[in-house]
Image 1 (cartoon, rainbow, N blue to C red):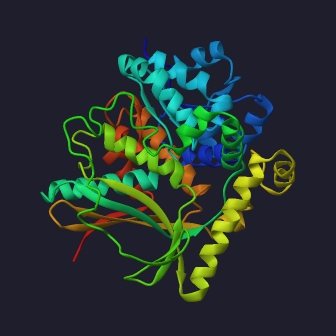
Image 2: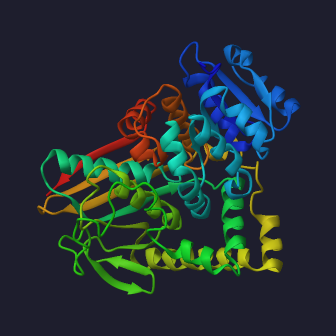
Length: 421
């Protein structure tokens, strides 16, 4: 039967959910059959009153997303479902399982390796059979990383430059906050891995998401990456532990704190994409902290802060203290603070032929809030419109690719690839 709805946004009353609903109200095509869903009907009614007149006619659905029967009943009503209900390991599986079984396209904002690993293992084959495109990580985790590398590989292929070799993403500008939901996802993953050797192993595995339906993977008909990269996009200079100075630019960089999730997503795209990104593909993510002594100190401070938060979340008493300071689920900064947000990320890659490329991805939007709302909303609208390709547990690059690139460009995002000297 033809679904009665094109798109359902679940978790619409949360902080990012409200921003996504507002974006859909301005960006959805005329006549789009969109519904808003959450646990509380009164809160949905309050949200609807803030939307433009045409969006106030959207249906409201009161639903418990953790109830498998309710999730199945909701999934069969719509072509696509987008959920902002996290942490996904705690609340997300019934919805994604229902979509995989019903053939309903699905998008979320997860940044949780353990959750995505579970959906790959348990739902990829089911979604492949039903025709559902399950697209995880449709926000700042991990659209810029995933599309940036994908665009670079596409350009190299078009130019006949061969596969990508050493590839790195460097965060050049990052101004904005992390949502309470993102913090809670980090918290729950830390808790889940305590005392669980299997979970720890998954979180430490760079290829944790590369299996499950991959049409190609390392070691199957291709050479393993060389011990010494053939083409290095940057040359390491001196270092202070993980804080490294680029010998060419003199700028200091540290590992990007979101790379632990973005990296496995990018590597899954490499494993799923027809032909992959090349047999010598390697990937890492870094954050630029500036030049000189100030850049080095900023890098050391960044690593110390990240280490402190990670250790604090892993230990009960300190976690209780951090919980009072960090934003809670459903919370976020004021509109004035978010208006100052923005991000710029550069993907630089060498290729087997020696050609080098740089792809810039950025927007003058707070990455964790308005920026994520646009990325998430446009991914959901693309799925509802039948755009993209494939079925199974996919990534933004593999499931949506060019369709999402063009949609984001139309909303002011920069996504451009240049050939380097």
